Image 1 (cartoon, helix red, strand yellow):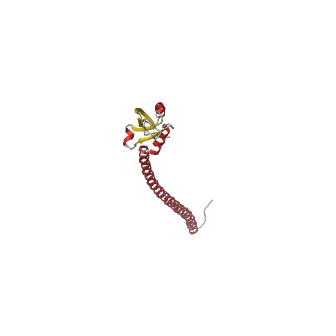
Image 2 (image 1 turned 135 degrees about the vertical axis):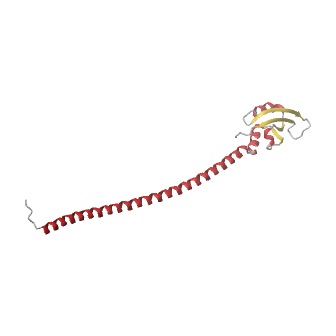
Length: 180
């Protein structure tokens, strides 16, 4: 086909075609800039969200560390209390155990227990109606609460008017770790 259009129209068509291409490039450039702006905005929003969440996590981690420190302090205090309680002696339990070991026809004349006595044998003086309870005392004081039962002496007193004429002296070692 022979191009018989005048040169001026040809140059205007060429300019129109170039303008159309420039318009397409500008449109593509504007869309690309818009996309980049949206991508940057979204990235900024995500990064701010991550920063906020990480600050919350750091705050929670600090609170957790403080709480664990307090728990550790409480645990150490409880361990101290437990060690004190393990060394603590409940004298009422000791007296109940001694009372259970003494037969019905006997009474305690003297007994002295203190913290120092628990590491050495305790002397118990018992008044009895007869000396027949000596073997029963030996059996009753042979249990996990007491050890090292020893009959020291038996003294009959014929002039006694209390109804308990026999005085029996024994020594026993009281074990610290017992339960009734």
